Image (cartoon, rainbow, N blue to C red; front, side):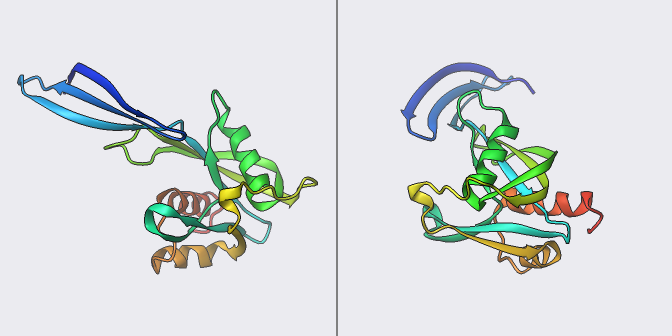
Length: 180
């Protein structure tokens, strides 16, 4: 089904997102309005130790008013390579670096309203980074926890991990590692 774009108006330009409102025309001739959150995308890291422990971060997420358990992740900078973003976020959020990187997938976070694309990586051969952890002011309450990947899967099943990118990364990583 093809839609014809009749009008596009940027309603909001923010620090992280923009909001655009489009008026589309269906092939039938009827019109519809679509609100689109424009986001630069991000990178997500499933960091896995030799014994299949992974690193999870817990941080305050304002839209939900509580702490959320997630994989380390961050927003892409302008024209930033997703792998470089993943490497930066792993170091900044956890204080670790990795020698081995492989891409698990890219995903649309919420395709009905947002154009964000998340690139999910598996990082292995982990070691503490010489520069250590470097949290941004908004991440001051972030905590890092090392858990067995099987326990992380159980946390998903118990709805302790409810973040979509984290669920996708853990389950795809477990499959790639032959665990699930």
